[in-house]
Picture (cartoon, rainbow over the protein chains, first blue to last red):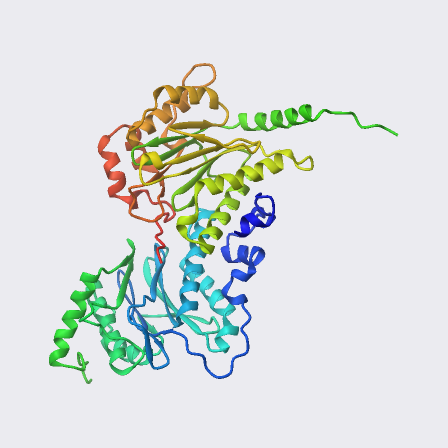
Length: 281
Length: 258
């Protein structure tokens, strides 16, 4: 490996240089080729077909925040994968869900998790939630060149702010532009429909259990109208990935818990296929 | 024109070793002991900010004595090495043996290079395995050698005396509370055979606990939990696993499975 082959086995100078607590800064000094943003793409004619992940939704409730994603990856009009996971823990108090080029997204999440863990180990304290959101912003921005060539990665970041004692949601655009969302947010191809659904169903005083139903309803509505978003697959037992972050930390719902939420919604929709109706006035 | 004095290589190395040893001997000791569920690190360290014991990776931790800026540099180098290795290959491919080798090469290179002053540090790199027989503890003295240790090990000012004391009393299958008490007893004995008292506030204690559900097995023991364990309340050991929040300092609980 790089650490070992360049010299006599002694740690190279970059390893012992004091200063930065960032793993990405270290990588750019020592092995810049490992950073996703440093790759040069060959010129390509037309669009290339690669797996894309689709819809991610998030909603906050008084004791925390919920982040969820569907399970489909598409490649043009083909379903590339029906059980892809697009929502990951970033660290103990935050999670990240990514829409866009699946391969790049997974690599970026891995690097982002490591960035947070590395800082925590070097400094002995965690980054603030804003700090984490900013690091993610930097990573997305460094990918701008690839985004312009069609390999965009657009995340949704949610976490429990230990200082302010509340759940917060951050959304991004391809340039790394970051904005804090209040209440709920969605990203990916089905986000238009998911946001419409969230807007009509969201209330500020929902409980944790109700918020879980809320995000799964939104994913259901997104899958209803967007071909690239996968709905719950009851036959194969493929349910959305749903995660909750509270002051107790990150938790991913088990398959049994997800199944319960999904089945309750499914049973209701057998009577009302369009889902719950909001008041007219 | 002046002729430089001839110094034999033996004498030059002996002088350097003497210099490093003196630096190390000035500091307080750190002891590392195996217990049924893992490895415990105990350091006498009144400072809350400057750690002598730290996490390197999922199952690997680091303890050091000597000059703070030098071992801190090595610690960060180790974290970078482990994170880079885990990123290029897989988390399972980061091992204490690999890390100890890199540290040995680094310390040895510095020790024998006439252009640099020798590091006044002594390190321990430990890794917990699936069972006590898979645990690994490596001691790295200032000159770049590696010593494979079992059961208990001490480094720092009073290391020889403390090691002897521990060797006589440490046995396999001790509980966390038992090894903690033994570790504190060993640290409270000073050179002249007298005894001091050490309170929980003067100790820095951390464990690599193989029973932790999280991927990262390193945990600091702090405050009430540490006091309870030191008082020998046997139920505290069970509570140590039951309430990770009470002990989680700085959110050291992060799980990062992907």
